[in-house]
Image (cartoon, rainbow, N blue to C red; front, side, top):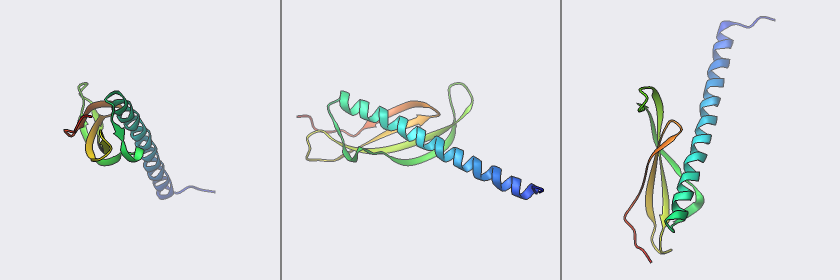
Length: 106
């Protein structure tokens, strides 16, 4: 049985796509953990217990290397009546920013 070069190319391509998808899930879990921790510390309620990928791109980090930049959006409430939006940004495996909209305090 021989493996053709074309078959090997497609196999490697599929494996790379699956690896990137798996890494994306890990980064989403990391971002969600940080958002939950932040909401708990600020006495906010994370709505829907989820975050949504807003965008991704390649950017250089402080170390000069290329990393995947990811931006996630989430919704929270402080009073239970209004919904507000927040944003968390990851550069590689590091959270670089977590911002929340101005909101009411109880």
